[in-house]
Amino acid sequence: MSGKIFYRERRKIVDGAKQPRYVLVAVADVNLKVFGKHLRMSEMKAIAEATGAELVPLPRGAKHADEDE
Image (cartoon, rainbow, N blue to C red; front, side, top):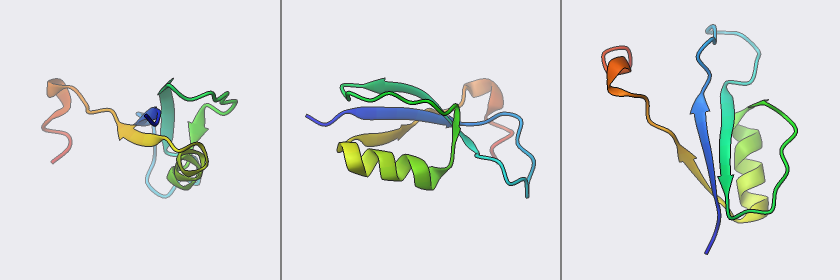
């Protein structure tokens, strides 16, 4: 069974900013230490591929449903 890497989008992000956009929230069943707090999607995909893990985006709550549209 492969592990899972859970992530979500950062809250305070400005369009066009050259900052990593995602926050790694949790890791399950993968022997992995993460030292960065904010990561780019390409970095997370590389980590997931190297460890054989699946990337799982965390959904936003119902309170934020109208913001996503």
